[in-house]
Image (cartoon, rainbow, N blue to C red; front, side, top):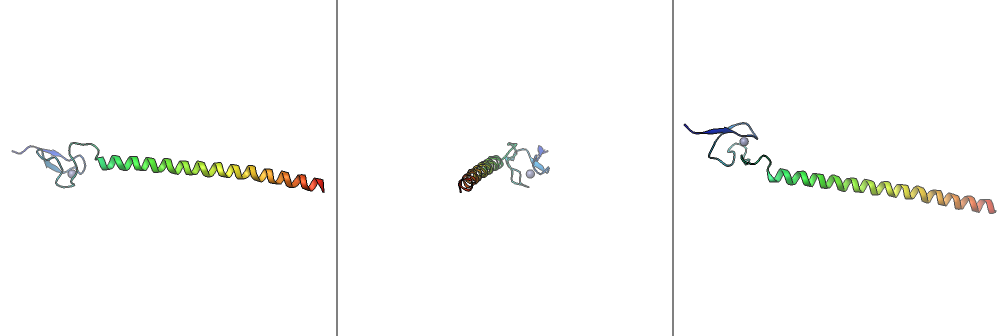
Length: 82
Ligand SMILES: [Zn+2]
């Protein structure tokens, strides 16, 4: 009798000698495929980049708000002079 195990990925019966599942093609010895890990890192990085962009936008918005305050202060000054 052949020794078998269940694929952790697709749940099908796989010969114990196999390193890769013949059904889904995944590595039976690794819990996570390198591709999955890389994707996770890439996702994390793009999320971080998005956060950076949002932070930059927020900063710009604040700076614009400050500028607006300064401009209206100057205008007020000019109006007060005239
Ligand atoms: Zn499988």
